Image (cartoon, one colour):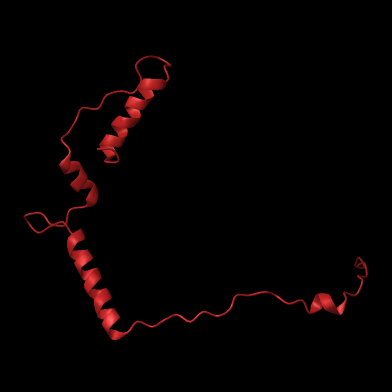
Length: 105
């Protein structure tokens, strides 16, 4: 077995180092009135968020967005072999993508 190298004893101050920590925080408990108010708010939000079709099925958000926009034919971004978009062409493509995603109206 290989003997270990003896280490210098550490001073007492290093062993008793104080670690900083934050003070405890009191988390308020909601009163019964506040709980009712919060539950009413979340129930209203849930009712607004659920979009239902005529047959009672819930429609996913991406299908709602797709239904709002009419189908448009896809076209290629590239107009030639190895051509990169610059300037006005790049801006037009960017704006077209933003319009499709609903970011820009």
